[in-house]
Every structure is written in C-alpha cells, then in structure tokens.
Amino acid sequence: MSIRLPPFDPRTVPVVATGTSEGLRPAPAWRLTPDGLRTQFHVPPVWTPELVRERRFADREPADAAVLLPLVVRDQLSLLLTQRTAHLSTHSGQIAFPGGKVDPTDHDAIAAALREAEEEIGLTPQHVEVLGTLPEYITGTAFHVTPVVALVQPGFALQPNPHEVDDVFEVPLSFLMDPRHHRRHAMSFEGVVREWYSMPWHDGHQERFIWGATAGMLRNLYRFLAA
Image 1 (cartoon, rainbow, N blue to C red):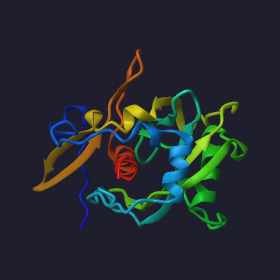
Image 2 (image 1 turned 135 degrees about the vertical axis):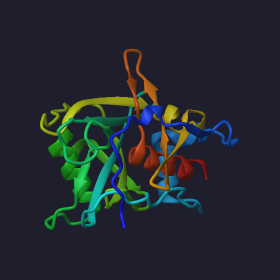
Image 3 (image 1 turned 60 degrees about the horizontal axis):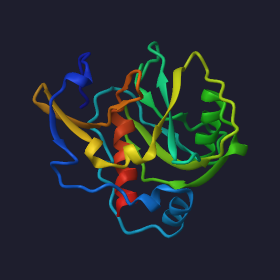
C-alpha cells in the first residue's frame, strides 16, 4: 500500500547525517575529468548503489523513465540541471535532470534520455557523448528511472520548454561529488519514516535545493566514482 505525503518544505525537515559525520571522502579529482569518467565507465569498478528504491507514496502504475546527467566540458566539469515548472503533476518545482517517460518508439533508455533532453531543454544529440548508465532508480511516484551519464561539449544553445522548465543552470561536479555537501534527512508520517538526501547549492544569487530522487541518483554517481 502506498501513502500520500502531505505538502511540506523539504528544507525544514531535520538533517540526521552528513558526509562529514559518515567519514566519507570526495571522489578522486582525476575521475572528475572527461578522461577519468571515460575510463571509469569503460572499466567499471565493483561497487553497489546506495539507493535503488524510495518508499512508495503515490497510487499510480509503474512507468519506465530515463534521465540525462549532462556533464558540460568546461575548465571543470559542471552538471546541467533544470528547475521544473510549478504546475506539473509530479515533482513540480523541483530541481531535476532533463528526462521523462520511455516511449514505445524509443530504442532504449539512452534514446529516451536524449530525446527528452532535446524536447525539454533543446540540447541536441550532436553535442552529447554518452558514457554509460547507472543502476535503475525507483522513485516514490513509481517511476523506474535509468540515469544516463554523458559529456556535453560547449557550443550548444538551449531552448527550454516553458511548459516544463522554469530554469536551467549548472553546478560544479566537484561540489556534488564531495560528500561534505551531502545531507540525509528523515521525516515520519503515519508511522512510516521517509529518508532522502539533499545537496543545497548556492550560486551566489540564490540557493538551488537539490533533493529527493535527483540527489539520490547523484549519491549513486558519487559511490560509483569513489569506488
């Protein structure tokens, strides 16, 4: 049986652990480079994803989905993220990766992630070098998500779909792969404890509160790159 969570501000939910309290170290700097990432995906280590399934809290049929983790090749790699519009039926207003449901016409999850990224933010495939995928992540809203990790060469011109995306921004990969910036939250509702990670990023003007499924998949990327 699934539960329906009441509206809440995730920023106010208590932090029960941080990467510092867990004694974790940042992913090695050399792996946070294009060649380091290519090597890691070409010869992957033995590792175990930390997060694979959230507690379900929505009554809906499961659906296959794919997201793109677009790492822009700059002096230091940065991750391209979106802020979803407030009117969407699921995960409205949240920080997310470009992506969505896998359509019957998609060859596979990679094709779906590339298609969705082009439809959602105007990122065309010719700028994208797919490196590989991370293990499937099942959200509390019953999406079975395949994260597709890719390098993106500069020179692209984004055209965000205003019906889905309020904003597009970049966060340094080194920040996200440093567990000192990872915070684990926990809340109890109707006797069920729900936990998630957050990785708040302040860009100098405003805070980007990265949390939930997005932070969970990034935590798995950290585990993969730190293995």
